[in-house]
Length: 243
Image (cartoon, rainbow, N blue to C red; front, side, top):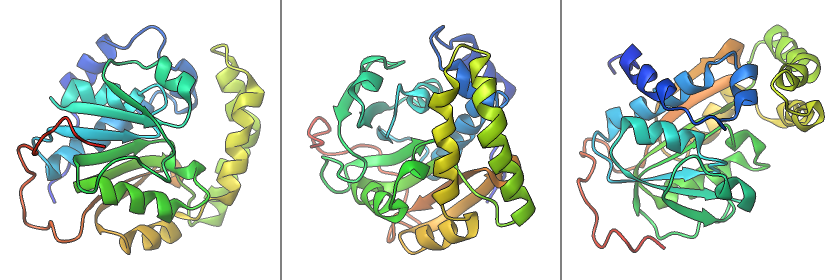
């Protein structure tokens, strides 16, 4: 596969329009790489589905990924999250659905692409969530989330960072350190990157699996089985009826 590249123009267009209430804490703790990684995910998804008409953002939160997608792809975007307050403070206008990522309230094969950013690691059963995302996708599934290196030394370095440094970086922009310490406990329970890769490879045809930041972040994109060699459909029947 050709190398996916997010251009400076792409990033500039995104940064120029970032709303003032964008989650600065997440930007700070990722050393301002989070937008770049989200853009890379969307560009990679677009490589496998060049003209998606409808995208689902799973566990969208306030819609940081949806916001980036809206700047890079001309698509209808549907956001789904379990937290009502997150959806109410969404960064973009559009369809918003209150639901768990374990039980997405949509028909099979209704979205051209199903994506998620920095949420999958919170699942107790990651495989179950990926299966559900694949069920409602017609073609592509793409995720960026917190990972865990297979290297023991790197795992412990990242664990130290998450436990003792990250919460106080978030405090620099006004966030409460205690609100971020839970990320360390999530990190302790997630599978290693190789274990995760094995899990998701059984669900769909894994096309891309990249690790970032010493293995503490991964990006993966997969195709629904049976769609290899097919172009992303240009339209869907009765697009308004997705539930």
